[in-house]
Length: 159
Image (cartoon, rainbow, N blue to C red; front, side, top):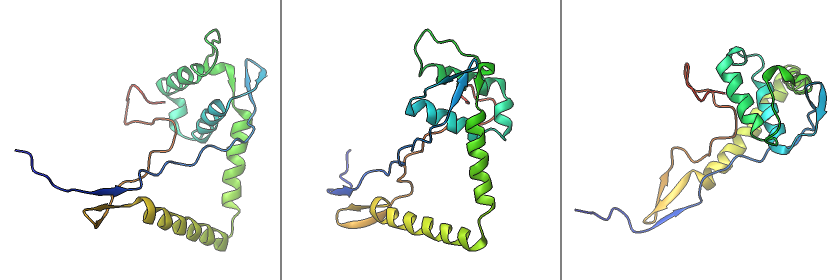
């Protein structure tokens, strides 16, 4: 027997991550500079962020990444991992890490406070729903940001 649990629902939807901001990353494929689309550049940037992790040594992880990356190119393009030169992307990620390390305690504290204030503001808008006029807190209201799938263990889709 169906039981009506509520009559009205008001919800602002889920919070989507902000769009990727181009950083004009240069990539060489087989020694030649390639003009990247926004999606391709975002993929290269995400890969570069993983450079100091054990994942990039995992052949399955690399293979899946290259297959997904190849799918963003023309069908005739054939790429192997060894054909890709991520030097520019790696340099950018290293510079970002270095900039974070050079921040003073006060700068880090201010940045953390700013992020917390923004998070609270977004929670007020997206983190609650009204059910029959009663406010209900939501557990998860944010969409997963784009990134490289890590999985657990030897997950076949990792990378």
